[in-house]
Length: 106
Image (cartoon, rainbow, N blue to C red; front, side, top):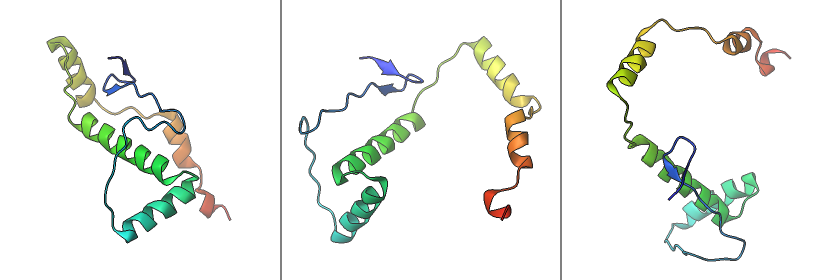
C-alpha cells in the first residue's frame, strides 16, 4: 500500500465515470436529501460526488485524529523545545492583519 501527503492516508484512485466498483446504499430522510442536493448544486457536483467527497473527508479527519506519531527521544525534545519557545511572527500574517478587510474598504 502506498501513502501520500503526511503519510496518513492510502492513495485514492478515483473510479472512472460510470464505474460502480463498490456501491454504497443508505436510507436518508427527505429533508436530508434536499439539504445534500442543495449543497451539491451550490458546489456544481452531483449528489454522489458530493456525498463521496464528504464521506472521504470525514474519514480522513477521523484517521488524522487517531494517527500515532512516532519520533525519537531527540526528535521529541526538539519538538517540545520548539513549542515551548517564544512565538515568532510570520511576516505574511503581520502584513495580512495590517490590511483592512474587504467589507471595511467600502
